[in-house]
Length: 87
Image 1 (cartoon, rainbow, N blue to C red):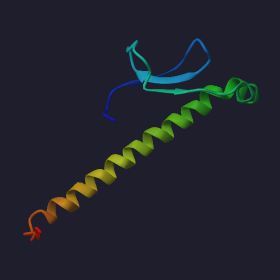
Image 2 (cartoon, helix red, strand yellow; image 1 turned 45 degrees about the vertical axis):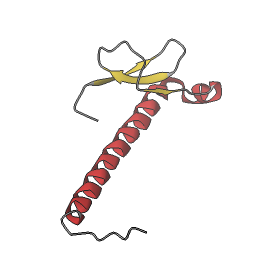
Image 3 (cartoon, helix red, strand yellow; image 1 turned 60 degrees about the vertical axis):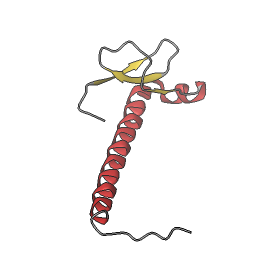
């Protein structure tokens, strides 16, 4: 993800969502807690949702880094001639 600003919001139905700051469109991510989970978490629901979203953002950053490394490795392979057999 880029260096945009994001905000965590609570939707009218009680879901927690991540969206671009100031954007009124559909959120990028929604987290729905069951009634049982909401009862258990009580006032900690937002903190748990924040931790879940932060873990998701970190995972996306790791994927981007892996893809960059993959492309760098394969760019080097393109410099070597490749022989193909066509039948």
